[in-house]
Figure 1 (tube, rainbow, N blue to C red):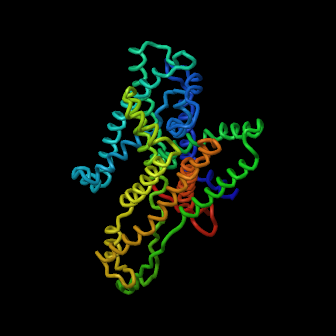
Figure 2 (cartoon, rainbow, N blue to C red):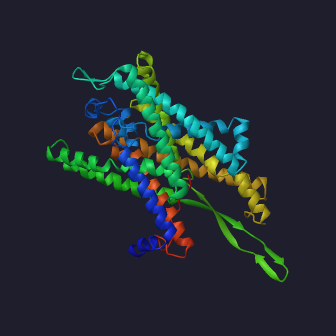
Figure 3 (cartoon, helix red, strand yellow):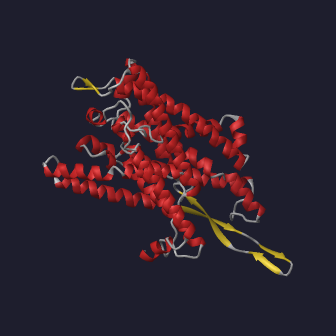
Length: 435
């Protein structure tokens, strides 16, 4: 393993990409400590104590929301824009044509995503500004600036912060080691690890929590990590045969191989997308703080850890598991490519029958993978409600951290293998996904 890490830095291009990625992540963390003008961050942190949807939002923002820094909104507006365009792409003919135009279509969709991100970020910034002006601690407001000045300045600050984070993610994807947006979420969650550990140590020191509970929690984390790795690497291998072909005096083909179908083709994207959807009601509440029925819905139906919240959250994860798998894996294209190369699945006719067979298998294996991730994301809320476990140790955070770490290792390993170096695993390869 040590030799493998040494090999990583022997490749000049890979070394530059890793250092570039690390530098941009450092810039992101520095921005997460720059306060927003007019807000007392320490008072806001005290006012937002307790388990709520804002705790999850703060987790995804790397602690920036609770401190009201310039990166308070995080990358969630960009993810929300991506979700909306992908959903519209399934029903809007113009977006469907762009998706089929290759690189040029992808660029246009990316541009539309950026525009929509600015709009969503501005709306969320306005709602957050309204929310901040309504908070008081011990009778003192946390905003020390006139309303007419604070709201426009906060909208501009938060929106520009989100745009800058979006740019950082795109640069990491293009010039770094890839998965820029996922890595930004990853580093934001990991940054909470020291605080979470200190909090747990304080619970033990003051006798608030028994050592037995701590041991059970650590064991649960290890089990979740092992299970996520197992399910992420699980595959259904569909046998494929290629007949022999004689071209000139040489014989080609005649090989028997397999088509690997991953149990979790969508990766952690359904978790991130589902969490973004669950943030929407709280955002609407910020935009309309005086609307009583919205506040009741958020408090009674969408309170983290509640039964209704868990059911809705789980169903959304399963939905996006199927939805994103359909986007990244097209059985018709796979069947056409197999037919063009003379390949076929034993007992299945080439063409339409092969596509239907692949789709049927993919549908069946996606369900247990999606249900597994939904269960892992929901079950820790029981512990959070019962023993006040830190948000960092919840299933959502662990799923994202482990999934993104596996994908990043796969990106690095692909560079090593391409240049004839051994990967991180001697007897296999880390299989990841592209975002």
